[in-house]
Length: 90
Image 1: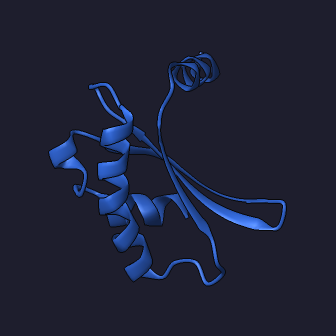
Image 2: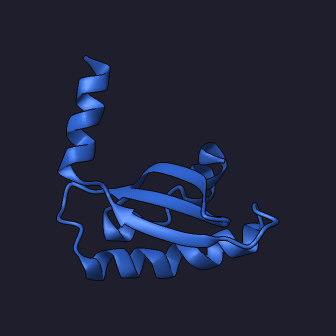
Image 3: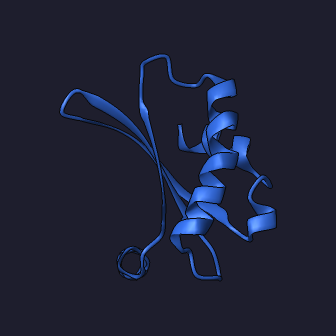
């Protein structure tokens, strides 16, 4: 799923200077979540995440990758995630 979503969104967030860092499809309490983590050299504030979500949502909907009903959750990569990723690579 991650590769498909990254390919679909490739280049679409360039104007916002963001990239898709990771994608997770997870089930929690009978709800399915498509979680898309964004990364940027700039600060990812709430306004920029909302702008990105408005770009991402129709693309994901049109691609119809997930047959079940799901919740799209778009968020920015945190410093803690960055730290954990660096530790895993060490």
